[in-house]
Length: 342
Image 1 (cartoon, one colour):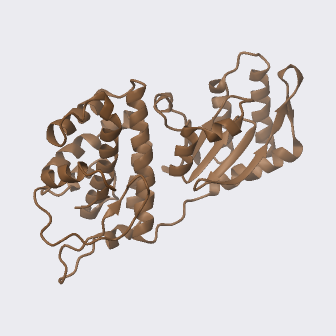
Image 2: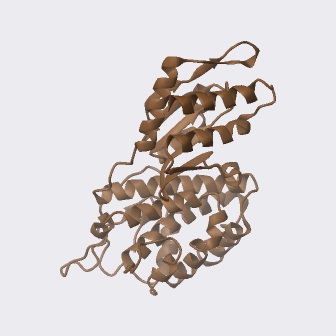
Image 3: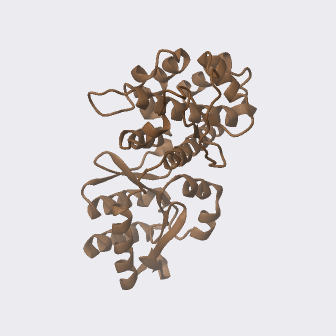
């Protein structure tokens, strides 16, 4: 592994000494580094998604997300970057994250600093001076980062909180896409549909955050409902999830034909939606969120994805269902904590 690190440093050094390098210049070298450390890992850098507030790299192994990396320009203060609103959002939502300027590495697990290391420093004439001890420490840090897995989901509370974190970053990415005028036509049309069906004036510029919040929660609710109704034969997937939405929820079913289709692949928040699909596909905890009994036919644990990450099991009053659109509209217009319910 030390040879891989030394090769990476040589590439960084060569580009940096030209005086023309930017943060983006070093991304190919970083991608090569990660994929050389573990041949099963793919490091994807999608500029369109990065422009809309997604992390610079998403790392996958066997199709499953294992971590995220946010890069800053070589020599930029990581203290300043760590204090930014962007990093605070990432730390809150992403369980396995590295912040790096290509020489210094800070590894966060569930928002807490787990470890840090430095490969070297910038010397005279922009020459990078390697640190032997730092190379060994960084090798170990990256190895542990690539091997790290999120804590297993064993309770409805775990599932609720994990879904909440993904909903938050989906929401924030959508808000940034609109603010930077990068929102897709599909996303703009969905906002208009929400305004027509649920809340008038939701497509006004000042209500972008409200729409993004509702939309992110709709994704979580819809995928949860689809997972509950999934009967196989294959594994639960995003594509085709609309077919598994109950017919009793016609608005959600139609909406999900758009949300979960192939056009979502081009959206900046697609990686987080797919992370949620992975979670639902690989845990049976959702069953305990949906259990019923003869004595309480409407007993269902609601999934809360409020901005406060609060959670508690609740029992809806008997007969509180009604038409889905009416129920959903009433829920969306409530200013208190948001709850996902059936």
